[in-house]
Image (cartoon, rainbow, N blue to C red; front, top):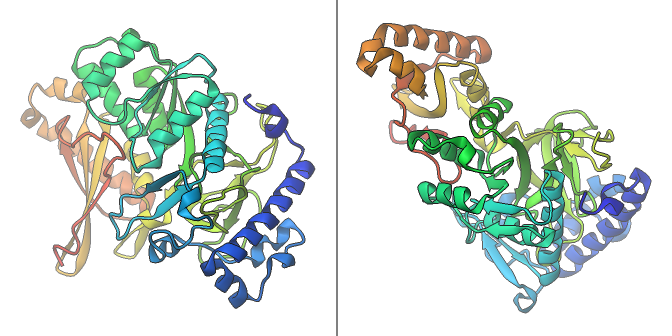
Amino acid sequence: MWNSQVECLTRADLEQLQLKRLIQTAQRTYERVPFYRKAFDDAGVHPDSIKSLADLRLLPFTRKTDLREHYPFGLFSEPLSNVSRLHASSGTKGKPTVVGYTRADIDVWSEVVARSLACAGSKPGDIIHNSYGYGLFTGGLGLHYGAEKLGATVVPASGGRTQQQILLLQDFKARVLCSTPSYALNIAYTLQELGIERDSINLEIGIFGAEPWTEEFRTQIEALLKIRALDIYGLSEVMGPGVSMECLQGRNGLHIWEDHFLPEIIDPKTSEPLPYGEEGELVFTTLTKEAIPVLRYRTGDISKLNVERCTCGRTMVRMARVRARLDDMLIIRGVNLYPSEIEKVLMQIEELAPHYQLVLERKKALDTLEVQVEITEHLLQRFGKFEDGQVELTSLTDKIQVLLKDGMGLTADVTLLKPKSIARSEGKAVRVIDRRRETN
């Protein structure tokens, strides 16, 4: 445990600390950020109105669109002369969201990542192979600084050049791998393709995040890489990686570092708070962020909170692994579904590899879904040639369609592909290809 004095605070002591910091954050945003001052005034609320944590519901929400509309620095509460670093999203859906960090923010970020790494079983002296992307994306540098604070040796591999990364894993003997889960799977399959024995690398722990992944996906990674795979969570608008972390002992939810991030679960339709144990949209208020504090930031992630004490001894609330993102929800012929739900079905079929894409098109004003998924090398070897297995592949296609129909009430076209047909990810996997505008 990295900081047992804080990680094992009693709920009463933690809530007292949270309330003090919440009031300070509300005062900072009201006094320094015109957007929040207006939001407070429009709601008839003042920072002095906060007398308990229950008063959190009086405060305004913040959304990703608010950051984009105030691009680049409109939500900052510090002048740029006090900002040590800037990060930004890719901006694929419009202007990027820009976040800043003071020197104190960088220190806090390093602290929560060090806690997260220790929570996963990493320790001082470990060699940590960091395959998260460096640059404007927060993943690479966030894990890097936290690992150094822990006292580990960092290999700043970033993404891509998978064969070279495997060479480094063999020669440097890293014990911990940090990456997206889809890139970890890419490494595993590249090992197989190159005929390299798994035992030539020293990995024991994988710390994976930045994209939703299912328990079935975890099982695949652990079987192929022979590691313990753990989930890390974060988002740049709140801090970056290290907002919460799954512990090695419990692996039953991710511990949120509540002394810095105050969580809520709300009903995404009504915006009303939900009690512990109920699933809804995850919301965070930063409690110590200086450069760009956020109040009640709506993440769009679907989760739930568990306040029971964990077997590892930590007392901070745990969030369930993110099941899906509201932004990722697909509406097809009136049926709402998430890519993770389809992944769960596909991962149950042993003849299928964990490489798939969902292709959406619109034909004659009707939305269609095609599930493209690779078969395993083992199945292909039974045929000799892909073309020789059409009878068995047709039967497998029918089986998948029935499972999708039974599980989600949706008829989908299923296309089985040869192994390696779908481009491998060196970052976040591209699961959905939406061509409905092109085919409208």
